[in-house]
Image (cartoon, rainbow, N blue to C red; front, side):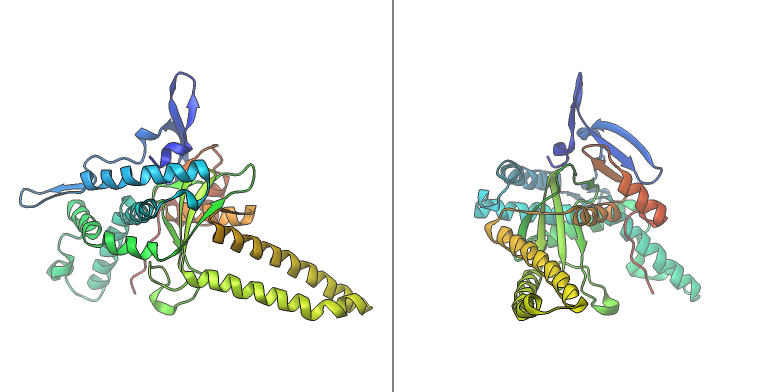
Length: 332
């Protein structure tokens, strides 16, 4: 339902997506039905306990599909009913909590904790909380329980964010990773980290088509933009007379500064107007690279492209080989 928008028709075949495997730089084309799949990925059964979320996830995707298709066609949030918005929030929360990336992070965290304990002379196998931490089936169960017990809270958190649409510049497209709901935060919250649904300044993004994404922002970011707009307006007012009446090289610098301020003011005003109206904010190439870089950094392994352009992926991996895998936390 999601990745189908990245597929292109091919002669005599099903529509196909371009795929890059970060682990080995391999690229190929395949129908969307053949990639980002895992048998019994959302089902656990060890004989003593059985848990399957396949049916519930299917219902969530069915409810979200209508809303996402409406956004793809009308490209405005006013295309959504209250129920549609709720369905998208639940779907986005689910995409953040499911997938291979989260389970890989769980396994890596367990490995780091065990290594730390051994370095201190302790036996990690004697720690009850670490029991089953290296067993993929137990990790699966933990991940499924996380979804079952917390999906509602994460969806409600998204519903309180400022939701808006994003459109790439002409001729450019959005990438889609195997962990499609990505997070970022430019606010420094110290040693405890700044990535979390309820952390001030959090940004979340979900591409829903090669030319459209949904953003979920902490409301403080919109307030920050409104403050920045007022500051630009005040600076332009306060320097207007000097820019017109002054002479000398300092005035030329002032006029250039005012031109930059005026450009920034127009951009912020336009973005706020589009966010308020529910229409798509137009990203420039740098903003698009930022958005695509988050998809690359958060993906555990596979990146999908509509046009087969993986140059940014290769450049990021060349600069930092850690991007061959997904994000990892460091235990200290």
